[in-house]
Length: 250
Image 1 (cartoon, helix red, strand yellow):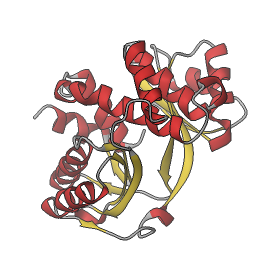
Image 2 (cartoon, helix red, strand yellow):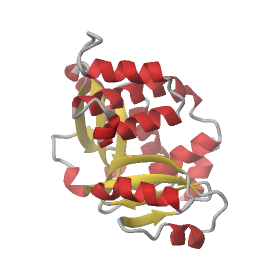
Image 3 (cartoon, rainbow, N blue to C red):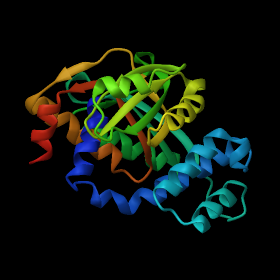
Image 4 (cartoon, helix red, strand yellow):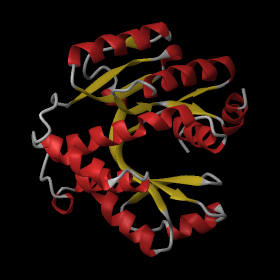
C-alpha cells in the first residue's frame, strides 16, 4: 500500500483526522462542481460526476447539497467560478509531489501553495517538472474485512486490475484508467465492499524514507491536504508500516 494512503488510513483508525471532517463537504462539493462543468449534469451520463456523487453520498452529504453543487456548475447559484489547477514540485528530501486543487482565485491559491512548499523545505516547480515521474491510473479502496492477502488477491483477479496493495483493514486495487468502473462493478459482484473509487496519479518509482525524514515528509503532505483548496495530493514517497504506526501515535 502506498505510504501516504496507508498514513491516512492509520490516522483515520486512530481518530486523528476529525479536524478535517468539517472541510470534507467543501472538497466533495468542489469535485461535483468540476465534474459537472466538464460534462453532462446527469451523473448517469458523466462518469466522473457519478463517482463524485457516489462518494458524497457515501460520506452522508445531503442530496440538497449535491443538487446545489451541480446547479452551481451550470451557473444557477451565481457564485464565483471554480476552476481546476494542478501544482507540481518537490518536497523535503527530494520527494516528488503533484497537487490537484479547486479554486475560485488562482493567484491566491498559487501563492499559498508556494508558501506551504517553501515552509516545509520544498520547492514549487513549473508545470511538467515532476509529472513525468507519474502515470494516470484508477484506484479502488476496498474493505479487507478479515480476508487474507491470498483470499483478496483471488477475488481481485478480474480484467483491468494491475496491482493490489494489501492492508489488514483497507486495501488498494490499481486499475487502468478506462477499467476503473468495470473493475468496480466486478469487485462488487464478487462480494467486496468498495469504499472509494477515483482516478489518481501513480508514481513510476518510489523514494523510501524512514525516521525523521519520513516525519518531515508526512508533515508536509498533511499541510498540503489540509489546505481548503486542495482536492488530492500524490507523491512518490514509500514509507514502512512500522514507521507510520509509530508516527501516528505521537
